[in-house]
Length: 276
View 1: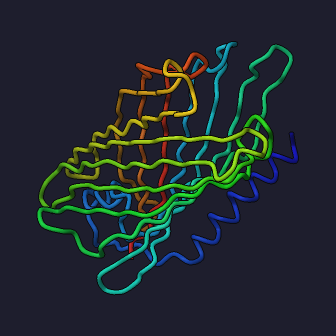
View 2 (view 1 turned 45 degrees about the vertical axis):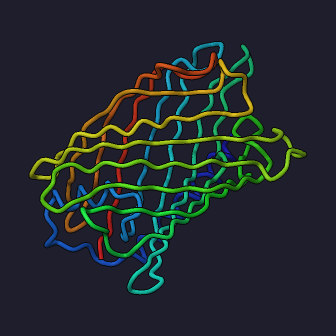
């Protein structure tokens, strides 16, 4: 247990340190509302390091509490004056409750997902922004209950509207990941995700937000396939010195979920932002 904690912590610390070292100085002249909108753009050309903590309640047959801290560094790559590639890595640190009495809790690194979106460098008419690319799942889990040992690959895309002078930012992100084989531990998988997001921004960097993560496990029976949350929260831009930080707090209720799936989720996010 202690070794798993140490290895997961070293991964997170090393990734964050590398991004901090490479990041440009934040632009002090950007308003808090502009920074909030930048944070709400999944394919914005900005280095950022979100730490998103999801606490899931009533998980498993013993109604335990699961906690997943997603460390999600975003690194843009300039292709030319017209195109960018936006990379996003999700490293989940998972606290898994026991499913059988006496089994004990498990903590460690789950399966890392890496996405790359090709996106126009400038918004289209009416503030239309899009990105399309691929997502890969890496079997990095440190324990059998925390993931699958088969590699995965699939398409991913995002589209949103973000107009200057308009307080609304809204869009949708979608992906589907298929396992490349089913011979390793965990067997084959076929997982779908769609995340609509809706934000209303106020002057001063405060905003209302809703971004439920809807998922489907196509390998499961129909009654066990979908997780559909409803909810939302509030966000605020703060500054630590010249460093802008995007914070969010929200709650979601799963109106549809598998038998052993959570029925409530509390989401807390702190995002370090490094505008050019």
